[in-house]
Image (cartoon, rainbow, N blue to C red; front, top):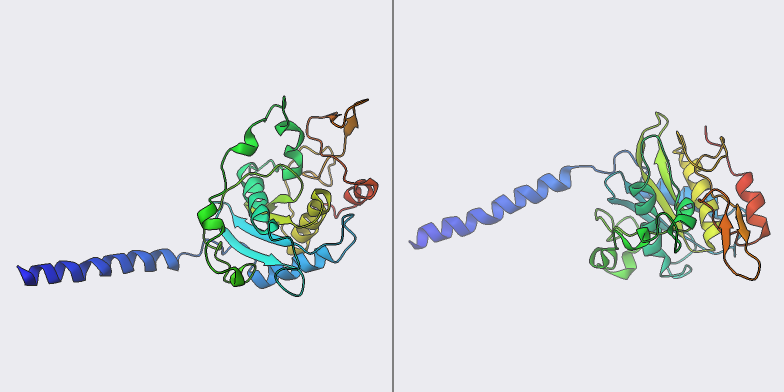
Amino acid sequence: MNNKLRILSFAGPIILLASSSAYAGRNECADLPNHQAFKKALEQARSLDNGGFDLDMWGTLVNRDGIVCAVAFTGNERGDQWPGSRVISAQKANTANAFSLPKLALSTANLYTATQPGGSLFGLQHSNPVDTEEAYKGPSSNYGRGNDPMVGAKVGGVNVFGGGLALYNSAGVLIGAVGVSGDSSCADHNIAWRTRHFLGLDYVPGGISGDPDRLDNIVYDITPQVGQMSGVSDGGWGHPACNGDVVKIAAKLPAIP
């Protein structure tokens, strides 16, 4: 009896190890840039005039399944950025991936108006909540590095202001999304756009912006209502302009290939 128990207890871990090894051997992120390439593109995008407060950023890449593949930050040290923006960047990446299709890209900026009270997508922002256990696990010292604890996890989350964009490779295949956070929402959009462009993953096949050269661009068509702080979007996909500069910058962002 004791010998049988020993055999069973020994066999169990072997099965678990084989299963774990098989999972680790799959490369879910093979279609996306690695951490080093992503960080370089994010830093290059952040260095330009993006119409915000000139702040350092967090960025996240997810694959088509919503699995986090890379997390990076700009600045000399972790802490030069808003700490809360790390998870927000993951939210934005998850949102852009979750609500884009092979022939239709929706940026997180495109979702702002529709998710306001009375909008056609009101409540969307409360769906697919962040998995806080995955988002905040592991030592903080690894955040934004190649071994960020979010990598390999499905963090989830929905965010409905600028900074999240779907990623399409040169064959027009939707392979995931990028999310950035750390400045005004308008600057976040511009930095995400330029990051995607520097990565060469902006072969967007369709969108709702009305600009044929920037199909999933942020839409600044909200007309303020007299006596109110809110406004009305002419097309239903508008986003507030954070200042006067961002409208001009968005109109001159790199065109899709």
